[in-house]
Image: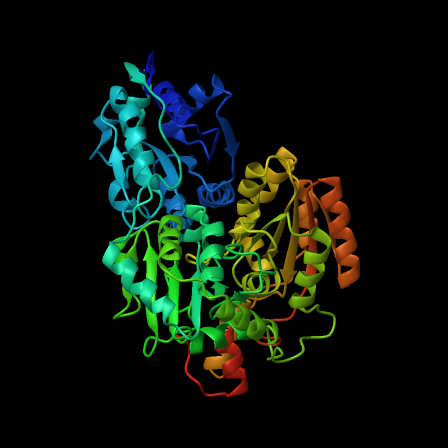
Length: 569
């Protein structure tokens, strides 16, 4: 039985969110959503986090959802609000992050009049959400919220959009409210027995089995089941960027990170020679598999566990599709295979006998700059294993993916590799810090990203969040500049930024900030800021990516053998 409630549509909407167990919503107020903010004023149980643009609200909610492994919510208004939000939702949609996007809209009587902020929101959201609906009256809001939550979490998680016209927010209604289930995953479907039996037989007969673990392991809570199957099968385990933390990287069967962006040589080589490979909760796209070379598309028996049937086996023709929940499917496979202790021992011995990386970076960087690999190593030493880290795309991602070893299963390293949007880490760290309930957060970002997301620093200072930003600065859009260097004859265009006063910007917003040009000094400063639990930003000069090539496998190959073709994503 539910409870009866009378109120405005805005009040009904917020009460419905509380029934779903939501306690936080990120957003920016706008004209069409004023009634919702009035209702929020009277309901402090739903914490509203004011961000400074809607794209940042989406990134903050995205990181909040990843860190909690749960649904998160954002609120934006019509017109500029929804169009800005779309820029942040693409990452969540591609990375399978469940978000509830609540948008206000123009009055229903204003539709088709060219009203200020009027836009076809359903059409706008179709590319970045899996479901869209528009409320027609206040009384249907509880049912719509329940359906929206269910859709966001079902099958492959993703954002959904619920659109509420401003007159529906003002309209009064009487409804019955009932608790809304928001568990993740909402169900644990299994593949067909024939497919499980077929792939279990392949694992039993393998000479060199391996597992590639992606973000679906986190969504399913399948960390223990992954380790159990690996140990029983004697299979080496590599992780994608989104799969970091799927397994303890000290585990004797752990290969480290796989793929073109941040993948280590050891993992890429091992997967290239594996004869049976199980893909778990990963898109297994060109970046994850180093151009479909690790594992190769031919000569390897591949099985793919994915909650979305259409994605299981999509990128590996002839593979064994295993559509189902990761935890349930891994457990079912473990029950079907024989234990292979000698193979496990031999695999572990081979892994431990081979260095993680044998290829040094190409180039040395400019004088007065720091090697990002050394920066990450120093940060890892001072911050420890339990801290949550949010990284930006560009320079931070490959170095964090390769160098930030996670020694306990879980998603504590958050990297935006759905689309790789610049500016993610500044607002993303806000969401991660709020998800961590007061524990400090480390964010590794860039000067290019600050130019896109500086407003997040105001939120951090206003809320006193314990976030320490380390900004890698090279006054360029270094990722694109590296592509121009390696594949377009060094013809640089549109990639040079000015050097600006990052420290002054951060201090203007109220953060402790300084520029540091020594790794040991950086480690000491970051350690002190983390212990003090105060907002801080430390700027570090680093070389352009083409001057000191990061652990991006195709780039290092191109540097060693100029003239090779540009990698295809």
